[in-house]
Amino acid sequence: MTHIGACQVGGEERKRISIFLNVFDVHVNRSPIAGRIKNIEYKPGKFVNAMDPACAEENEQNTVTVEGEGRTIIFKQIAGMLARRIVFSKRVGEAVERGERVGLIKFGSRTDVLLPLGAELTVAVGDHVKGGASIVARFK
Image 1: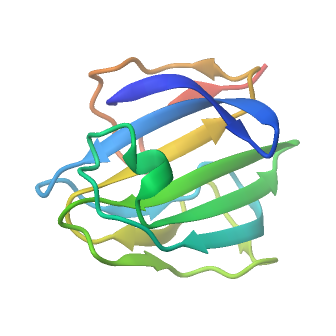
Image 2 (image 1 turned 180 degrees about the vertical axis):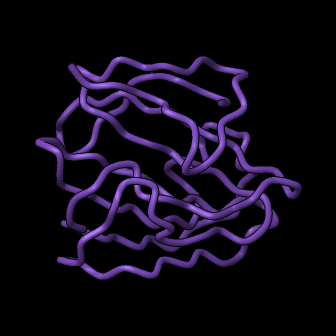
């Protein structure tokens, strides 16, 4: 975990968990919840170092909205300095299972998980998380 903080998405405040993936990490992205893909928004951009907070807005990225389990979760696949390819295998309307592989970012990159304010985080900056295994938040 490289950053935990607040952000605005569509005028709604959310908690942001930023996970930096270095060249030695597995760059597979998994769905944080079971549900349906509500929206996918690709944005071309720069390739700023993924450790830099500016990359969340400036870099090439794919923003995915998943609705399910009574909530909406958004996650971003953000390309880094070395990463030049974002892959996402699902389409709007398709069902996903919690922990299901949905894409990857090739080489150094970052993934942001944008959670509702009511989410209780179970991770802290500096923690090492594993896709499909680590629980990053719980909901009441």
